Image (cartoon, rainbow, N blue to C red; front, side, top):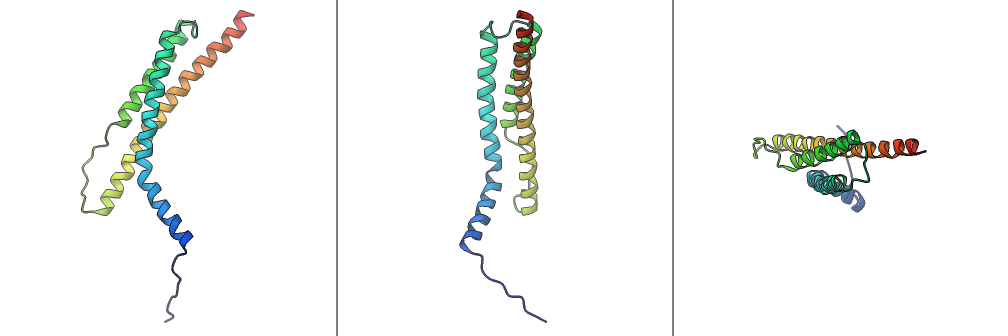
Length: 136
């Protein structure tokens, strides 16, 4: 039987292997950081859309914008809450499964919150376009 021979990983290969592991570990933290930023953005946009009457003149569009920014804020806040499920800390496969589910959970709320922001901006853009055609 032939014996397999190999070589130790190069410094560059070790760097990328370590970097890959660290990236996987940091995904949940990164998702939480983005959710925090979305809370800040949604709060600011919600406040602006409520305070400045000149921006949105059509009531139905103003309601849609306010609701979408408010939903974005609420969804991002819910996504930021800790992911709580039972996990056996002695079983690596359980920990891996738990972390993947937690990341999937966070990303769902992140993308849903982002979609609400996009809907709010789309409504504002629609208001601006409608205003251009009705004012001429």
